Structures are given as structure tokens and as C-alpha cells.
Length: 452
Ligand SMILES: [Zn+2]
Image (spheres, rainbow, N blue to C red):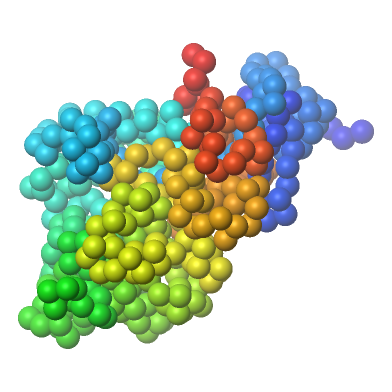
């Protein structure tokens, strides 16, 4: 006889527990104690963890997956304008007000808390806030400046965060220019920062390489119909100096041990980022390209070999593909955001919403990604679902350099769980948006319940 385990805080039995681990382990039950997973397996094994004070939830066929990790999520900004999104606003469909600005610390705190509620209702237990820093202190949104980090710190200190937050610092403007001087100053200050816990961590820095193709601001090898080819947003007197400055930013961050996420959409920007990473001293920092609209297959192979990641948004394809086709060509638009190619190259692809650009609902993200990847490109419906679920759990944990303690369900890992009304592996991707998120558990704590 094995000894009796300490009583769990929470035991869920009678469902499908999808660990999403490499072996594809599935169980019917899971037990949680002190914020960690104490057991995954069958009901009998889990019931041995039920003792005095244990909350026992009967899943009745519902499914448990790892908590969703929204790996590119402007949460504070979303909290400011939700339920509007930027894309809805562009389409003229909603009440998105351009003037929505967070002016005070209290408003920023409220926006973070509101976004935490939205995230919890969607099963999101981790997210990356991509771009906070002094360059946005007087920014148009008020949602990306230094004070946002101050508010996150106070919430983390009080245990009031409902999701784990990874921050990318930004030493320039959102979707705007940056200078090597500001970047160097910012990195010196960052070295003094000590935010590093399982709930709030500064993961690295964000660099805006370029804009977006439909605005002709993506830096491309070819040219736009007007003969232009975009340019880097990083400051410099000419093309060569801008490129040298961006490479200097990436190198400086890397040498100080920080990960770099580069907003890069044009093929020339992306190739330049890969060139910069190829020249770095070896270190497992997992620099990644954000968006990657026009990345070529050859560059995807190269990025995989360099240990780089790609963080992209399938929803941009239906939302902006028409504009891209009109700006460059239908062929370029059809090959953009190459989800299947990135996975085939071996990149741990992260899918995200870039909310409030797109809706933060990852179920819609998966349905859209499956459609954009193309029928059969990711395998049958079950394989497609499994792959795309990993792009919202396992791969973002890799991006966070946290796969040893989150992203899959296993004994000793954090108890970040998303309970769905049905087993997603038995649902076609297009049907996933109709599957309710019933319960969200972060660090063993119920942070959302559909039925309460
Ligand atoms: Zn973004």
C-alpha cells in the first residue's frame, strides 16, 4: 500500500484531462494542492487525494486543459476600450472611441483589473503585456507607459492578479520610432529591476522594427506600387545606420540576458532580425518575431535553426488580407502569416490576439487559424486542434522560458487550468467558439466560474 497523500485543496474527476505533454498523456481526473498539481490520472487515484477540506468537482464529461497563455495581449489597453476592439473600430462596427485614454493611475489599475476579469472568463491564466515603458508615458492610450508597470507591481504584491503576467519593456513608442540612445538608457535602468516572480516577470524587451504592409510601412525586399519599400522605425540617418542601430539594440539586450520580441512584418525586417540573432553569442533566450506577416519559408527554417520563435495572429488574415492583396498582390496575401509552414519548419509557433487589435477569445483564434492554415495542412481535425491548443499553452510557456513549471499539466507544475464544456479534441476547430469556458483556475484558485 502506498501512503495516504496529503489532502488536496481541489479534486476534479470524471472528465477528460488533456495534459498536452509530449507523450499525449490523458487522464480523467486531476488533484491540486498548494497551487500545484498533485496528481493527474484516473478517478480512483484522484479520490485518494480527497480529505477534510477538499473541494471535489464532478466534471461530468467536461474537459480540463492547461490554462491559456495569451502570448501577445495589451491587457491594460484592452481594459480601457473593451468591449470594442481596434478591428471592429476600423470596420466601423462598434463604439470604439479613439479618445479613450487612461489618464490616471486609478484608471490604469481599473483597466488591468477589468482585463483580468475578461482573461479569466476566457480561461486565460498567463499573458504577455507586450510593450510598457517611458516612451509611452505621454502616449495616446495611456495604457502602455511606465505607470502601468507600477500598477502591475502593486497588484502582484497584494496577490490580486488573476493571470500571470510577462512584461516586455519598450524603450520607444508603440508602433512608432525608437532611438538607440533611449534604448541604452532604458536597458541600464532595467538592470536594476527586480520584478521576477511566478506572477509578474519582466521577460525582456520589445523593439518595433517596422509598421504593417497595408500602410506601406513594412520594410520589404520588393516594393509597393508607388515604388517605396518601407523602412525601419529604429532611428538612424540612413538605411545602413538604422539597421546597425537595430542590431545594436538586439545585441545589447541579449548580452544583458534579456529576451527580445521584435515587431517585424516585412520580409526585409524579419531577415534583418534573423541576421542579428545569428551573430549573437550562444544563449537560450528565445528571441522572437512578432507578427511576421511576410516571412519566407527559407527564413522560417533559419529562425528554427537559430532557436527563435514566431508570435502571430491568424485573425489578421481575414481582417486585413484584402488590404494586403490590394497593396501588394493576392499571391503575397495568400502566403502571409504562414502558420503551417512555421510549424513545419519546427518553430514553436505562438498564436495570440494582439488584443485589443483582435478579440482576446482564443477559441475564435483557433477556428480562424485552422481555416487560414488550410484544410488538412495541420492534419485531421483532432491533430489540428491539438496543434493549435499547444500554440496557446505549451509554446507560449516556451516563449516565457517557463516550460519547466507551466504550459502542460503534470505533477509539480502550477495548477493553471481551463475547464471546457466539451473535450476540444472531439470538436471541429470551427465549432470551438461555441464551447463554453466553464471554470478557470490560476495557481489553484478559482478565478472564474460560469455557473456562479
Ligand atoms: Zn501588439
